[in-house]
Image 1: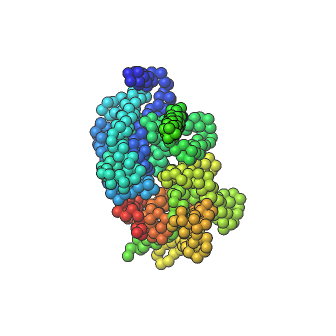
Image 2 (image 1 turned 90 degrees about the vertical axis):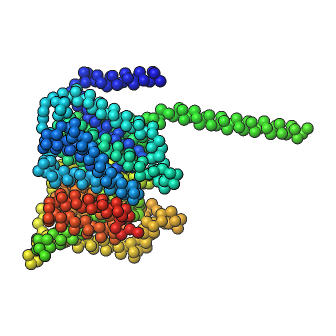
Length: 349
Length: 284
């Protein structure tokens, strides 16, 4: 255990010292991987229990636009603006989540209702173009290096903030995973009626995970805008980004702690790599390959990259278990054989 | 009654026809195969490009190009079923939805790659009809009429032919119909082809009114899903009614406020209705 703890601390130290080693471009990639990894982790909190939301763009959008608007229009510091936006996103999740759970809106219907939700937020942002800048997006007023404005122009500084936020996401994942709520949600996912019959409070379990997931997603949106210092409806709200969240989480593996982060790493490396490889002459080439990979992922490895790796790593153990099962059967058979022998001898006597 | 409001209402009805046609194919596929093609609007987009390409580049007559586009999208529908849906027919329904979501990304970027991000249109200017003081676009009226004809043809096919009856039977109980000797795979493929064909027909009608670009699917895709869900997924008459409700909300509130606000309102009404009646407005 101490060895694992030491390894963990060493890994953290390496991650924290990364800004000293990496050039700006890679640091920019790293910040994006951490922040998107955080958002994907937040989505996986509910996605892994069959609550497939195509509406997380709504929460991301509220989290992204809220602090920026409050800062630009009313000089409210993001230290206040982000919590307010997070609360707003959680409230929206509650307003939609409560009746959805009450009326047992699940599966396709749940996915499509949440898809509509992401459209509502995206179109509202566009419709309020007088203050949000519409489709062109907006820029939070720059204040240089400022704790008050939560603006850190140097990438290395922001990297540390992103790292902390990402760790918060992992903490939330572990907290949910180890709680009894996890078992309850798994039961609900298997059979909602049966889960209710054995006394699981479906409303409480579902709403709790939905609120946590929505709030963290909004937090990710807020931090992301503080980093990019620019926000537009397409990158933080709407159907496109909602689907992007779902796919990256699935590609990485939504059933594992680091899966969503691997998804962020994978998608970013893929798009950047293809972009550099193809250059700008083939706009769309990168996403074409990305789309094909997504389809293949969902057909052939629905547990994602990390899910596959975990399966491969536990293969020897599973083989050993199977072998142990066979040996045990043999032992039983031998024991039976012996019993027969004894019985026969007794009878013969 | 305000003459402009009346015009908005009439245009809403006409819009409803096209939306109903869009929803029809999606509903058919959902009802029979129990799958939501999230990439449905992107298939329509490819149909629109097919019409554009055949008429404006190869100089085909419009009607012939439309017929070819319908066949082309029907073929795409069959391919979607064979390549994407069939391998995961047994897994959770949400996986099928997500797999076609991957297809959405693929088709969108493929269109960007092949055609660029330019807005393209047929360059046909259909006349505007003037009745009293009301102006009605002829292309919308045409789309509305063809949509009604298409829906009626589908209705007759499903209710009057042997194959249509088999399709409806599979939609009701896929296990029993397998035992009765219905070849499920064949029914699924035919349904996918018809669903694709309807998407192709919708593409022809949309091409008369709108410019096509790689991201057009995102503008009317979500609204099509809303209509299907609102009518009760798989319930075709419900989908038809829902199309007109949604299009009236869009047209009337678009008249009073702005076009984005009208879409916001339509989606909010949708969410509210579905949370009150998850089975759809005409569901049991």
